Image 1: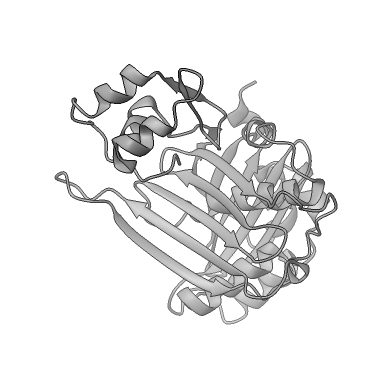
Image 2: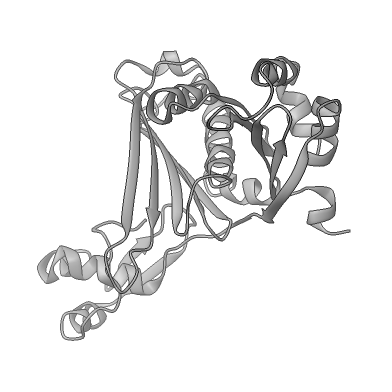
Length: 300
């Protein structure tokens, strides 16, 4: 039996035609476990990261993404940055940055993370013909108590698109279900309200327990949900030695040489834990050989 048969690590797009509603279901199993095992996060923080990873995958289901889509939450409280990314190929990664004095029992309730929080969704698509990537970003204040409700706020304010979301994460799995009203007047007059009432009967435990086929049949058997397609999901990181070399070149030779301690510079990717090592001669060679890949000034 394959993961496609069981619904594990899968994205499924579906359409409830008569109601004029489209949707996406995501389930992460091994993908989520690989993201989670990179760092020993407090339980509440891990739950938010799993939900964010499921959300990033969900949003690639309908958005035009040929590069990567990321979701990012920034606060002035105990969670400085939460970041999750899904590529067009279905690979995911994620990370949370906490202050050194972060408490061990960080709340999942976003209202307890302090004022001034921001939620961002960023799409980076290929520019084509060697041009710079094309980036689209939407920002909304973080005002909801739950992450899925915060994303609903985003779609209502930034996209003006009626959207329902449920996200859930445990130690072993993360999952999400998203419904959106089709643009225009498609569907019967009561379709969106009717499907919303059915959606409200779904809880986090059930979302985590059921595969897409079983879940859609349970919720929408009267209206009928047609599965349009999907894709496999997996953990992967876009870091590489070439990107690290370009990062070192970007910070300049003097700064790069200062990174050499006890004979070598050690650079660890925050997302996957891969370590890259350079001795002093290797650092100097970077500034006599043109770098092949453009990269920002930090590994990402």
